[in-house]
Length: 53
Image (tube, rainbow, N blue to C red; front, top):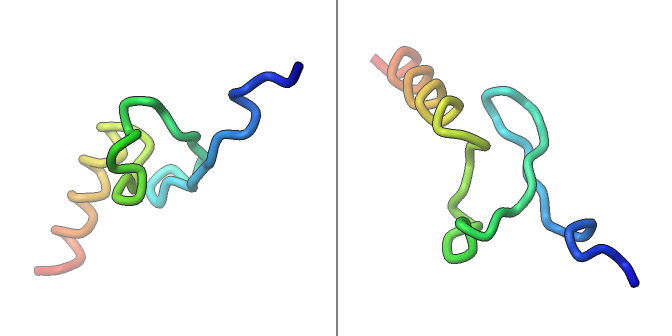
């Protein structure tokens, strides 16, 4: 019997450039998830704010 978690979808975080896998808490909005963590989310928003004066 195969392990279920081997086939989860993944994305690449644009801030840390590391892959991250689908999590149950993202079930409803996986399409809109961009960042792997709250830290990367905050850093991504900070980078956008600095680059767009």
